[in-house]
Image 1 (tube, rainbow, N blue to C red):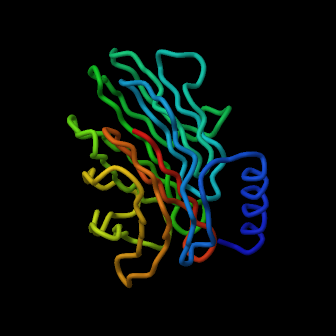
Image 2: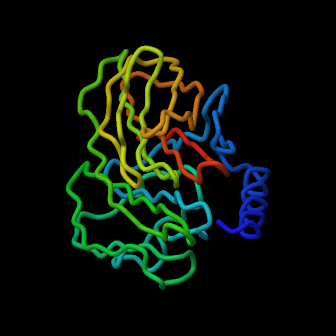
Length: 236
């Protein structure tokens, strides 16, 4: 990213965090946060969630052909809920906020009861370009009172793949850029989470997360390595 653009983006992110934006962040080098915050809270049981993982992208809107107004606006790195949509066939699209073009995502969808999807925007406006991916949210159907499920959503540029582990478990390996891992079932409670770049083992994030029993989570990590990395623990 050009240095002048870096300054503009950094100032924008700083103002966003100063005004109460959730999540934790770092410069992308060996983060040691004490906790993760910014949980997405309650969501619709059948619906779609929009995540903006592109560090220099403007806010983006989620739209349905069955609705006049946008369903949701997503800003870089911030938590969002699943918004309810009907089970009828509809065109789901994503575009910059308050605009209908350029279209970043468009697909006809029919959602069954309790079916949910995440649309992820990732990349940047410079080296990688902006891309989107429709991620199925197939949560484990049965979790014990002392069990939780977690997956990784990867949107960090300059990291082709990520590995994630706790002190006791290797959670996932080689999660590709712009994708999500499968859910891994772990014990509920406090966990020390470490996320590394697969190719060289470089630590991108290290911190503590709290997982409640019978709940599923997505750990959303996005931004640009060597510049600014932001994380959010999303309750699915």
